[in-house]
Image (cartoon, rainbow, N blue to C red; front, side):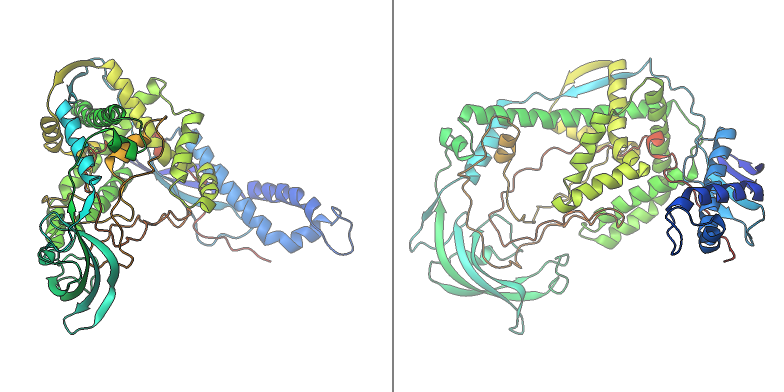
Length: 568
């Protein structure tokens, strides 16, 4: 095989490979020898079909397979001979006009990983901001759960007031009197003042009494998910089924037992542990950003443009998704576009940090073991329907790139933990508000620790979404205890029996890639206005920087872009 380098600029490489016809012919003969015993033909005993007949019948297919094998072997030999470290899948193109019996000429183009300078990690200094869990924080959570579990007493002939629970049947109609799809339901529980329905709906229920019928007029928000209703006026014909007043919220052992726990003390302990976990996540996010800042400041080297482009596309897609939740979507997109160059620089920084972390991990023996990898695969498989989980597992096992992408975040976390152990760390107590402010003041995109709360978009606005089945923080806390029993008596308000156009539906999970089994979509939203609006759990430390060497190596064997012409 002859190799000629045609490009060597920065991290870009290009070569012309010439594979002798004799080498291809040898592979055809080897393939023929391999498959001949498996060929069945009338008039011949199994495995006794003459080689010349096999060649005549299957020659084109044998030739194609031999050519592909030669190309794969040639590219792998090139990489080994030149000691290349591909950053992306090599581009391989077979020259036009290839004919059987002639040499094959290939054009191979690729980007290589840079030589990363040995990172300096002996002088790392970090400050760890810690937030103690105050009794007041636990008490606040307890009070919230008590309010969510409060009992409702029949109000009789009393007119509904703010804070009351009104059960209604409803029929939504356009202004010309036509009922619209999804606008009819029965037994919908409306807690007046909760803000869970479209603006104006709850306010117009004030003063209603059981047995009364009334019509209200509302205007759907401009960003309402049902596009045919967005910004439109509509009426709702209501039949008031009942009016109930809230009973006193009581924090006692019964509150805990209603959640499947043994005592109030156990509930307090679980809540305190949950809050500590939230604080630890915030602490880690802040400290990781400071760590990556120090690494970035001390290193500047060229990175592969293709990796930067891939990282930029990932950031851009995330920003575009977030823009869809903004009140003025076009303004958000325009702002993004004005800052496009800044985000591309951030993508370059993240790729550089990924390469640095990979270099540190490899130099210090950091690895994701087989048991950890298996656990990652099984956890990821849970997002798919039961009948597709095995298909997903097989996909990851057969696709090295998919496995690398799954492994990368854990690999990075382990390298970060290694660096935390090496760093000189000082502790300082602070408040949760100050820690969150410190995190918000920094650019999470630059370090891959950006998070986005889909219920609290900037500018901040009250969440209006409903979930198919509410899960309160106490149940979540109980599920973290290995000895806690499932909640059996969780007091929930009755759900409506019809679709509720007055409640905004939650987002569905995006479907998975076409190459993988489809992930389960979010459950359709039922008409439930009793959704418990607990404070969102602290922002997750979503690690975005990919360890480059974990994801960069070519996953598939290269194949020629153009099929060679072969004679039958």
